[in-house]
Image (cartoon, rainbow, N blue to C red; front, side, top):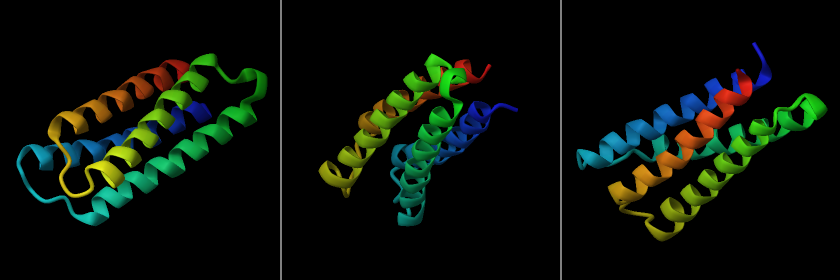
Length: 115
């Protein structure tokens, strides 16, 4: 299994946590702080690990892996800005779905890089 496929599965786990939170927002349930903090921290570590994997790959690193890194980093920064600064207490569903859509694009890019 390539290191990019490992990273894909790692980001898929991050996405599972995000999907759980979107479900909680849609059903108007409060999101436990541990879930939201875990999702953000796990994503931060995953982005750092993807950067490291891409650097270690040197010339063998697929171009799509760098694109995936850029998109996933944008999703991380957007999530931090929107959900930790602007909408700290109440995240709108449309914004959570938009944030998740950026993550899905990054996942597709990363999967195609790993395949």
